[in-house]
Image 1 (cartoon, helix red, strand yellow):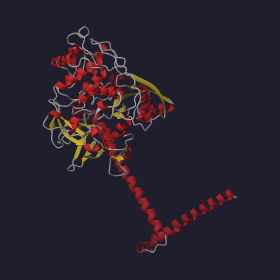
Image 2 (cartoon, rainbow, N blue to C red; image 1 turned 30 degrees about the vertical axis):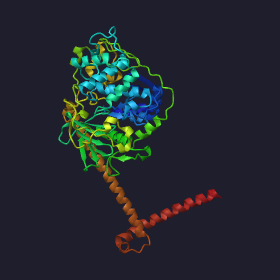
Image 3 (cartoon, rainbow, N blue to C red; image 1 turned 90 degrees about the vertical axis):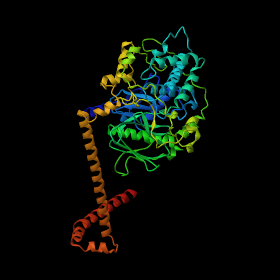
Image 4 (cartoon, one colour; image 1 turned 30 degrees about the horizontal axis):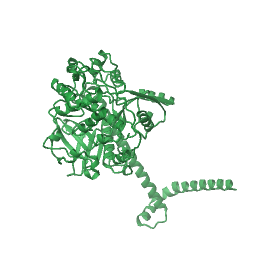
Length: 567
């Protein structure tokens, strides 16, 4: 607490702050903002730097000193949201995934979404079966290094790049085979568009998983996609609710509730911390407003509790998906230039100026990286229970053609993979740590510089290889458990104090109302009985009459002053 107080005091003395924003291509954008600059100002600076007009799909993510992820709120001051001492470090990410990314108006927008989905694939957030994985990786190769050239690409060249948490030799051979034969002649733009069309058909497209536990204590991942609310548990999708079926999202402490109109479904899950639960709730409120509503004027302030004096209040500020698509259709300008850099396979991490980094790690080194294996996953849409999608009533343009033909199986449990869903990035202590600690070491060994996310992770000693199950297993042990109990007690005490203050306030108002009624000339039976009691007569002559004379005197004095000034 003392360090935060001192940090806040130091910030108040400064008039300008330095901000470093990590972009999707791993480059850095550094700028200086005023002390009272809002998040929208910083976001507009970044979009101007990128020459980006379709910017509503993107957001700025940061981490607080407690290692909790947050999306920067554009209506609030940047400095007040950042609890750390400047310079501030943030990163640009896709916040609202386009329902049909290949149909985006401008190529620069498609390219940025391509970079984001490539990250999702690498960190295991985007599941896919082996055949889809090979095709996606081949499209990445074609977009980054162009056509296959025997003189430049020796045998095993595809193994030099890390597309997934872990590769198999069979998968690497299949990637090279597709790149050599199927994709020859495709331009980077075509390959990226085909990549997006393939990725949007995967059931975990657009998933930014939040690790939680169910009522039985089993680990689960909650996520909000363009088509609805998803719960992934083990190797199954245990729940899927379309946005028009979700009626309310609530949280209290570490408990998160989802209410659905179909058979009065109430889903309850537990986040690791109250802050994580609040972040989960805010993400759900924003995604529901963005994808479900027809106009931004329909957005309302949402409360996390049914009682007006308790809980958090939050309102999504921004345009909704339908408005964004209508605005994008009106864009008329020359397509901005996109700077892509080719990748040269080598044993060291490829140097990229404007393109994404495909981490090159020796085969023996990759086997040592302890990241969850996402290989050989079967897609849900090929199973007997296809995932339902968003209701067609909100516009067919929001749903890809093949998705709109999926059958409705909201209540059924469907297998999504052979292995448990365990993304390596979403459960890290810091939101900007896009790589594991061992990959960071391997980059240093190969002479490649670490990213600012990795430097942040190393300087704090986060332990980036902690998985979701390990994190939850450690919850309740040692200092973390004690801190969690203290936070729960503090929340309870604050809730009781808030209730007590509201109760006292209501009683005071009722007392004043009763006094006014009894001193009035209303001829009501119970008021007449009150006036005849000795206690009321004593109160009337000893307190009320002197107080009334004092107020009358003050009013006459003020009235005399006003008359003198008017003369």
